[in-house]
Length: 164
Image (cartoon, rainbow, N blue to C red; front, side, top):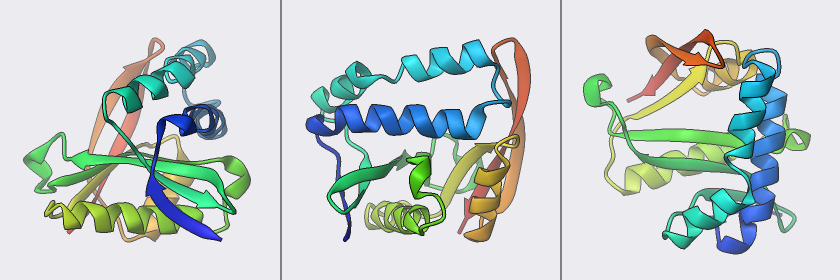
């Protein structure tokens, strides 16, 4: 059984673990180790509880009653790409990779942005996250821009994928 729903405070522990495991899976060897662990620590259970306490939420995908992944969405942070909506984060517990949950989560996130009348979609990915870049390309994302970020003392490239 697969379901989509908005996250709740009681999901904070699970969301924290998904974030940790997904980041380690995607970014070990891309983001320097200490910087990666600091970034993960900043998004622990307390951070998720604060998000929910402020009325925030993420789109959660459940598999057989357990949260398997999430998408954080909203208005585009950069309108120069003519995309009004953005998926800021989309992560799955790595044990669910390849099961189609990421595609379903992406499609539902996009539908919900469209219902909010946010036309067009933008998603950023570090280029070193080859699996993530392949995923967005396979969903029809077209490269729209590149830029660089400094993380942990090194400069990393990222790419924006866009959908009309």
